Image 1 (cartoon, rainbow, N blue to C red):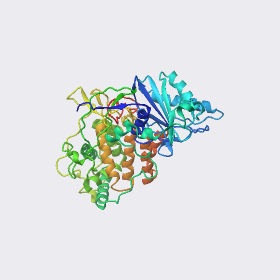
Image 2: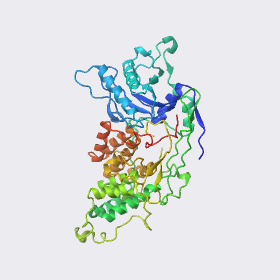
Image 3: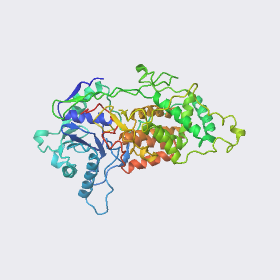
Image 4: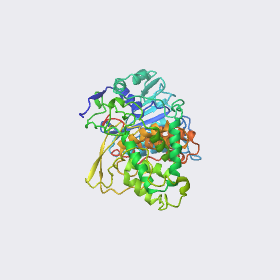
Length: 526
């Protein structure tokens, strides 16, 4: 695939118009920070603004109520606002807020400057020095300068007007410029034309998909498989088959993309920006799980799974050790899933033998039952021990929620890289680059499974999708999915743990590193 033609920057409204496309939604009560590498934009960071009167603003998290981290290449949705210490003044709070924001931006070690955008409905038509955000802007300026990321420019965007944050002359700026200039900018129009869209704020009312009627065939299959899995939870053969079936399903949900070539761009009037359109993950004809048989005409259709297979996959998600192994396998390969299971002592040598009464399960404890007819697929090449090559290319997929850099990337994972443990993978600390392509396939399968029933298996599918979003740095989306999972199955432990991780501001290790991060747009999209 040749390098795409370029989009053009003609003014700050184009830069500001790019932000909602980068995040996927128009930010509210938010500070958006963008590191610069020369004249190129790096990833986009979004955090909740503190309250103008001195409070700490919304808590960490996503959606409407907050959560942790940052919406960026360096993390997920949340607030960089610290809890206010007793007796500390507003300036101390703002200074600490600024230091936390800068700490997130420093994840991009190639950055040498920065831009800021305040999305607020309070005072966009108030001159700079009188702005409620003047104090915060000053603290951010000082912190960025000290970190070697000097502030190049800043804007305040309100509900109806926007202005340069440094404009103090009412005759120059007047009441501000209409926000419609941003929404109708040339860059915004071009991105819409090329397939990018701006949706609702994650977690907003009405953004959760309406529950579908439970398919009785899927429910029956799920109950049947749950019964068959019950005595086999610690059976190594059953574990291997579960990974085999999930491998096939994930590969069926994966579209092989041709990464665009490198392109240069500059952040200056008339500068070029590559095409930011991101191909959708494709689907496959009903009943066909061959990932090589992809029909582009089905790309917008839901992934089709037979009731028997859907029931099998949903039932397997209700066994935590299997669920975790699937997530680890998607990101880090089969060996990581298997070695971690061994390390955790998941297998019982007696499982599937006389340790269980054969009167009930006698016909089930012989050959491992399969939801598929025909031979099982070949195992995926292992990302850490493939003997055929010293390294392998790992295609990426659509940088994090906040990323302004883009498209599928190709990383090189050394064969000698140690097999990571479950904790390292689930926190995004290893491998050096995850298999973003396979994680897209997993996401499509999970999205389909979550709409085919209710209860614990649906909560597991929705929570796993939240983890994938957190890995991308899209913390607001992750938090909204965790909330959805807890509404579906109150007390679901994995959702509670991952949501707490976000509330503490923990950033996914992959999202914090440019070379490993998920990319929403084509390389050097801005």
